[in-house]
Length: 400
Image 1 (cartoon, one colour):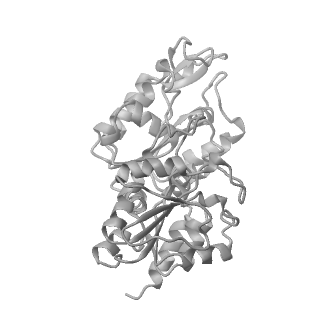
Image 2 (cartoon, rainbow, N blue to C red; image 1 turned 90 degrees about the horizontal axis):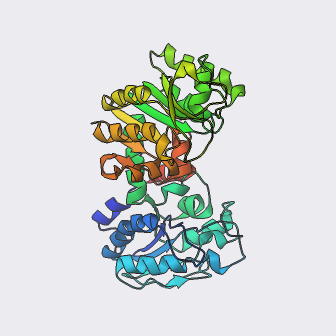
Image 3 (tube, rainbow, N blue to C red; image 1 turned 180 degrees about the vertical axis):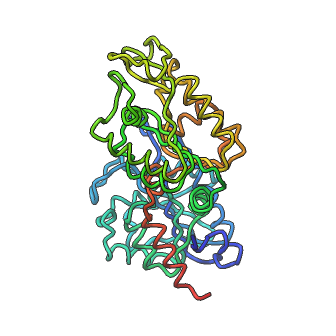
């Protein structure tokens, strides 16, 4: 994917004295008192901001926070807590600017945080008049917010369309490189893990990956539907019987290519969905009418782990069981540790996946951890992301 990289602009000395507008993803969780409870996204945004400051730019940063109503400011929608935390991380005060669309004063070597961009009327609908106003604020636009790349909004698409120069920040560039390595230029075998409660929410992902991967591991409620499609009983487990034909189509598409969807040979069941429920390991053919399948069994876990250890590339989205309950975490733990042990390049994304990675302490053993939930899923679906498309288009317009 050919985009202008902000890091390259800095290295080429093209940033000094320029007005740089960074669209970051600072949408962090807060408690009822407005205290930030997890600041990973803020910390991830710091390298781009530091890069701009050290290159002598006048730096403007903005982000969305929550789901505010456009034009209706409420204190809970303010980026004020983010400005404080960003200031701590940068070791300098970061002023927060409201009502900034018509202009903001910032000098080279300074940084300001522009209030929640989704408060601006026309932001979500990518209003052209708003986008042109934003573009007029800057000499160099930088998108460093992969988590919003699947949305065509004024600060993710419109400003890039009209700015003098539109570039990808280091965080966004890293996502592009990781996704390219995993899907466009993978080392084989390419193994994908797609798990979740419903086939319907990930059907397009499954179909897209069925055309690319060598092994497609399914888990959770999705695996239950595939078990039904393979003629197995799943008792009272979560599944979508109306999508059995779709599951069979994925299995057949893989088989035609000489690839496979491994079906569980054993499972861990309970008679109720609860953390203290009694866990029973059963062969996949022995699931009783009242059973709930809450995890893959140890034989299946070892079978899948062996495949992962031999993989060349691994794409992971979703835990394979109810890993939040200790009695039903065995499958997800085995998958996670196998990925950690594998020499494959691995890319993982999705909120539950990140929670599993954190639970088993393998953050430093995953090749790349994607920060963009919805954007990551849309990439797996084979969709073009608007914010990346416009950066590609603007790069193509530049004289070589």
